[in-house]
Image: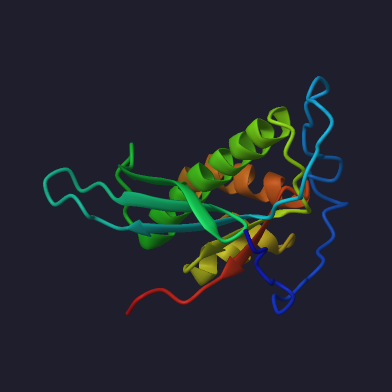
Length: 169
């Protein structure tokens, strides 16, 4: 399995020191075996389709997880809440992806797989990525607060880095 080359991705460093996320760290299992073998890089692609279900008005989340460059898990499900804007449905999708990434990282560690660095998350919504990654970005929509904080905390803890990728037109 070839590792992906992410050297071309921008590596912006944001200070989380003055925010509630200043002391967050990834929770590592204390009873996991010593990692052996080749390390892996975890990659995730996430997207949401606003108002996909015309009957209920719910959006659909799609997530694809890769170990190095090999797809190993995917997820597609109607969202539990009705969102009134793309921003909300994309933030819900990002939260779902981040929660899955954290679960996968823990599982891999319990299996003794060495994980290198942060997991890389790609999404196509510029506003969600900016709100997640830039420490000074305020939350303007209270409805999205939980998704907003879960994604930002994972980024501040060094679990995930979130990057923009072009979506289909």
